[in-house]
Length: 303
Image 1 (cartoon, rainbow, N blue to C red):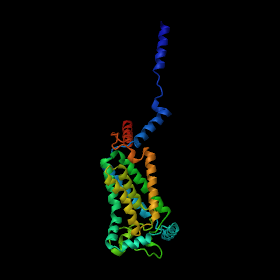
Image 2 (image 1 turned 90 degrees about the vertical axis):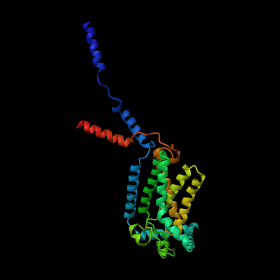
Image 3 (image 1 turned 135 degrees about the vertical axis):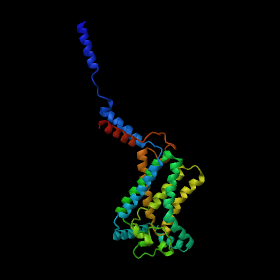
Image 4 (image 1 turned 180 degrees about the vertical axis):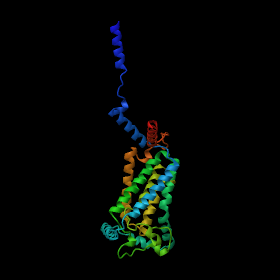
């Protein structure tokens, strides 16, 4: 019986020996990482204070970087001549004709000057607010499209400085802001010294307006809203050419940046923004903030 007792004690000792936890194994770490990334990618309800702060900081950073790009005037003017030659070869170099024709109608060109100076801010913010309010599950993905589009545009400003048509050598284009003394544009007049004049490629007026238009068209249910969504980037294209601020090919560059933005968003969220659920399924804390809180708790417990 003593012998049996010894065996029983030995057996109990072996069973109570500590085993390696699943979370400490390589497979456990991979699963935890996968859950964390999955949580980051899951659409969540946005928080208004964070979004306002993020948008303000992001636009300030964008403006700072855009205006910090060296104004390579000689290269920008040479690139403008090259763009004009390419468009002439393609038979699409009609910007001067459009500029002169619209400039002959004073009320129309003055309205376009104000359109160019203001609506790309007003409409973009308006669409962001609308998505935030009525389609919160799609908001983060749509916002990522806009941010990625704007981010890659900064690369274009640095790698391909480009003068707008109104600043070309020997240009016969009309600088409509100077001629009609309209306010608000950072591209002409007294405010031109606050903005990089040689960052015309790509056109973010087109990149942002296309984002607005496609977002509204894909998400809105009212037919009139979807039609307006398509008309907005079309009108913007006419405005940027009529005011001699961009070439047609600048608009193509803006569209390419937007395509990049959609690719980034789709690769992160696994679907296009309008394909995501209208309302987010996850209402808990964000994985990043939750991980930060856990880390702080560990530090406090060790102290």
